[in-house]
Image 1 (cartoon, rainbow, N blue to C red):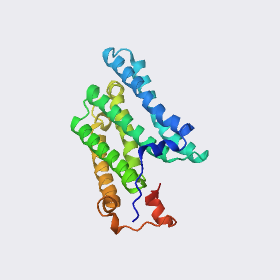
Image 2 (cartoon, rainbow, N blue to C red; image 1 turned 45 degrees about the vertical axis):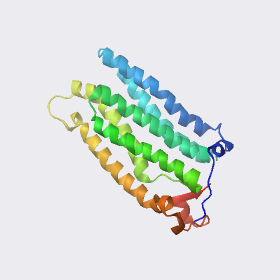
Image 3 (tube, helix red, strand yellow; image 1 turned 90 degrees about the vertical axis):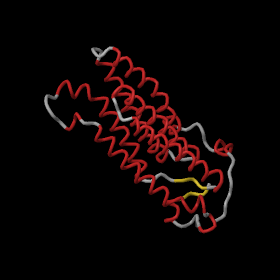
Image 4 (cartoon, rainbow, N blue to C red; image 1 turned 30 degrees about the horizontal axis):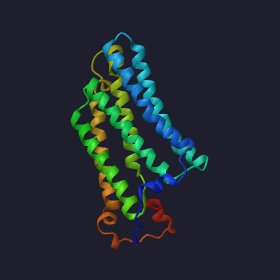
Length: 224
């Protein structure tokens, strides 16, 4: 494999001001509103409208996550920066969302810690592949599913006050911790899948042959 190192400033030589990049960043700016709405509700539980605002803000972040990739392809605005910006914004927002439900809704803190460690490793791997190998890592379906599952976990925990208020007796809907355990399972599979794909590129690049014209290879790696 030919190693072609990159410099961080080269990311900024690509298109920056695109609709998809704006949507990615907008997710991060929604996070303070989500935190504020949740805090206001927890301090004044009778003001249920703030719980609704928090849930709608969470749904808005999920919508931008879908739209940024869709519009990038539709408007032909895909870029190296955009492909890194999207997952980085995802990591900030998902960690923020899980932190909120740890603080206010008794989500297991050990799952949050495991998730943070996994995201830090993901940032390191992505940076290493770009800077040291000249390759842009591509997300797999386990990673994408994990981000969507985080949204489900956060929304489920956020809705617990409404569920307990409207559902009498035992119900699976009153056990949001089940979603947390599923999240851990999916994250473990995702880590295994990424390790299998990138282990040799990181530690044994001399054993890898990458043909930029090979369609099968391009599904896994993209030279930048």
